[in-house]
Structures are given as structure tokens and as C-alpha cells.
Length: 321
Image 1 (spheres, rainbow, N blue to C red):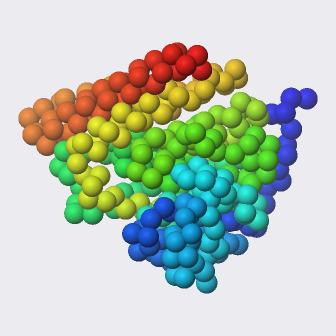
Image 2 (cartoon, rainbow, N blue to C red):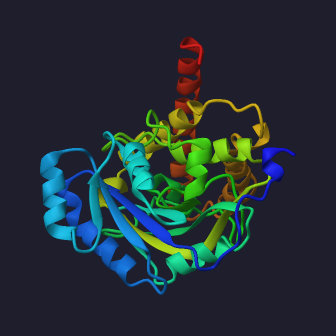
């Protein structure tokens, strides 16, 4: 019997959940405070809250002095988001490990709605909706279709619970046992301070689905978190830089022998939505200046993604990866 045909998990609505938050700077302590407070107010309490930091003694002392009563504060295995998440997983004792960004706030039923998805024993991962909370308001030129640029759910995602390739990192969870079966997040991918590389979540999810084809990762929009969008992310320069890095990150995901159709399935589906639904709909309203500006933003972002992807593929070819 193939690995993917084996049912390794039992459905259980009483699963224990460890929540992992990571941060890298003292300046983000106000966000961390609000995030932890939202976790303490859950309708189903997490079994533990783990706050993982970049391995700097001064940073560790700072956060332990502020949050040691509410969270277990520890240093990552190295610098960067993937190292922090891996350290959180290795330290976690829950059946489910959930991840939330340091500048996000969980809705009251976030954990409840995530855990309910795992009643299906074939579900190995789950994530939810992420709504942006814009500081200083949303720019008139920024369309909902580009919410992924600021780490949030974007227009074009499913509106109801469904299987997906991977969850978005700000709001995701996995069965803890799966890390022992397929490994951890790759540390040569993902965010590193303010460096905007990503794709560690799709790479990890693809590794799971390649090893266990019958397992499922679910998007449950009722598992909602609110993600702060800082003023610095309102700039067109951030949009272009983030889009370029997105394309580069996707190109650096190694090819898998199995589930080839899933490799860029999410991106292909998104592009189909853009060019068959979103762009034609906006073109019908060409007389609206704000709409035309948002169309321009979509074009610029898409072009930057394609450029980044081409550069990443060229790098892989040059390095024979």
C-alpha cells in the first residue's frame, strides 16, 4: 500500500494546539503584545504560546522580561523566519502547530475553526483567511487582487472551505507529526529580516503532498486573522520589490517528481482569474480613474513577478539546480 493510502491520523476535535509566533526586533514588541492578547482570548485556548526570536541574547532578554508569563520565549536555531518556525515546531508539545505573524491578531474563534478542520483524518494542514488592517488607510491605487503582496488573502481566493496547495504563512497550521515524516521548513528559503524572499510554505506543503498524495491541506476562511499593514508597505516601490521577490522565490522551489500539476497550480489559477475575470471586469469600467490606476498596479506587479521568476530560473539553470 502506498504511503498516501495509509490513514495515519485520527479525527479529534479535542486536539491540543501549540501556537508559534516569531519576531526579530525589539521595535515589534507592541505588535507581539496585541497578538498574544488575542491568543489569550480564544474561545478554545491554545495549549501553549511559543515566541521564537532571532538568536541575539539582548533580544532574548528583552522579550523574556515582557512576555515570559504569557509565552515560552526561546531563540531560533539561526536567523530568519524558517529557522524560527522550525525551532517552534521542535519545542512544541501540541498535536497541531499553528503559526501566526507577530503583527497579526487572531479572531476569537481562530483556533476553534482551525481545529475543526482536523476532524477529517486525511487533513494534515489548514489555514484561514487574512484580512488587512491598513495603517493610514488603503492607497487608492492598491487593488484587492494584490493583497498577497502584504501577506493577506486576495480577491480570487475561494470563499468557502476547500483543498488548497498551501496556506498563507501568517495563518497556517500543520499536524506536528508531519514534520517528523517529511522534515522542516527549508532554511535557505523564506523571510530573513526585511529580505522579501518567501515560498517556504508552498515548498513544505508540496513536499507533504508529494510524499502522501492522499493527504489534504484545507483553506477554511472562517479561521480569520487580521494582519497589520505598515505605512512602509503602502509605497509602489514596496509593491514592485515584493512582486519581484515573489517571482524569484517561486522559481527557486525545487521540482518534485510527483504532483507536478500542483507545482505552480495556485499561481496559474490566480493568473486565470486575473485575465479572465478581474482585468476584463475592470476594463469595462475604464472611465473610472481609480480603476485604471489599480489596473496599472496589477500590470506592474505581474510584470515584476514574471521578471523575478525568469531571473530565478536563470539562476537555477546557471547553478545546475
